[in-house]
Length: 485
Image 1 (cartoon, rainbow, N blue to C red):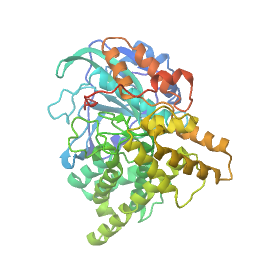
Image 2 (cartoon, rainbow, N blue to C red):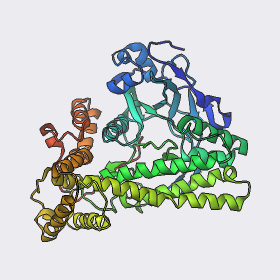
Image 3 (cartoon, rainbow, N blue to C red):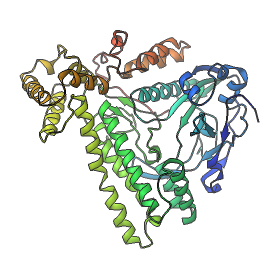
């Protein structure tokens, strides 16, 4: 064990029944080198950013040494992957433990790409540099956008090559999360554990994420209710910024309501609900427009797992679960409508608002308008020279919208300020992310550093962000993302 200043580790997960994990140390690497450290995140964790760059801490971030108080393990879980149920688990990630922050918060620290585990299923347990930096970039962009997410503390290279289609430089990402409890964790418990183990897991989730839930017979129902609420809020936030997760399997839905797993994710350029980027999502199961119903489907799988705890009578338990899942759509829609009203500078509610909103989205799809830049232009009052803004249909819509904004107690200036706070002027454009990753694979990290700086304050509307706001050049080849994290 290595003792270093700032680390304050525990591992409450390791006190759960052993069926939920296997104690597993990371596999040592040859010659680790630090690529990037998240200074602000490090400080919030009670760590000194500069100290993380020294040899002793680099050894921890690379998995070559274990900090005092840590209990490294690989978590067991299951999951529906594109609708098919599988036994899974951490195949190339090791949960080092939980850092106790200066404010008393408990957060997971996980090394991703840290070598084989009992759940590797034939994989090498390693990760390439580009997917690890991709997760760093996108997760930090999501955080800046105000969307609950896992965070990235650091990325190190391993000094080793890993075999994919070609040999690639290896890397390890240190992921920070409120926890790594997933819908799939509960599916695993329900499928292979005893009822007492399922109950222990549920009690642990309540204590860690929903401590205000009273310890009575209805606590597991309230756990389900709270997870549904958080996911309804999270998915609405994804939709409002055009984020497409790409792999919404049940093992990628967290109990705490954070976005997790940044594999084939991307941000939508041209507005189209059918947009899919993931190379493996051939049928569009996880397309942009399908994300809300898929979230409800995933939550139904959580409810199924909790049935033994909801009621002793199976039929009654099913009725209780169905009733709660039916609440998701209304909760999601309420969150989404509130968010998109804000994007249009609307403080109050009117019956016709939904029609006004849907008309705009239909026009955006018809004229192949850029999602982010359309709302940015409305915010700035700058109608760019696009087919959408040149159309008579948009002129008619704009007149209706202007009249609607005038029917508020707040001023137009207040309305515009609300729009500035809710419409990002910049997102991590897919082609800009790819540029940064390609440069990083060649050893040039400056492109990534400049991109990270630009997206760190997405509501700034600064002139420096301008070069990152343009959509990609038109191409006959559709943009594709790949699982690699």
